[in-house]
Picture 1 (cartoon, rainbow, N blue to C red):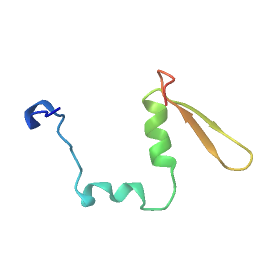
Picture 2: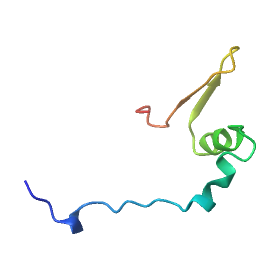
Picture 3: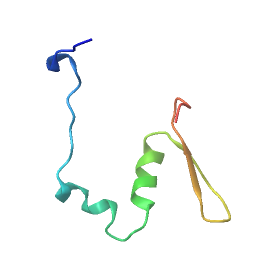
Picture 4: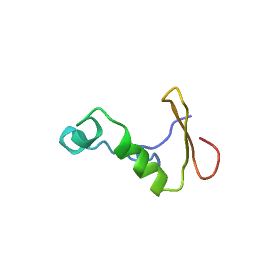
Length: 59
């Protein structure tokens, strides 16, 4: 089956410069704060692991 490129979703990749905040201090707090704000359920364990579940429960 051939699919026209115009029917496929566009792949958007941010520039590397836009991702500096992801590893600036090698801490996940910024990302976890963002997920919490977006409604993700977050649970941390005594072993310092973090588990996250999306609002719809699929991820």
